[in-house]
Amino acid sequence: MKKALGWILLVLIIFYIGTNPGPAAEAARSLGDGVAGAFRGIGTFFQNLTT
Image (cartoon, rainbow, N blue to C red; front, side, top):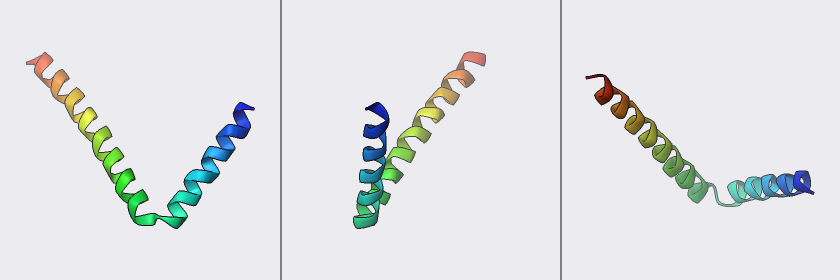
């Protein structure tokens, strides 16, 4: 059951990207920016920890 739900979710994501490429790209860019910001914050934390 879990595997089937995973496949359905993957198909829905691919369908969304195919039918709405602009908003999908913006969502991916926002997610990437958030992840990059989190890693920058972690880097700043460890940099401040060593000084």
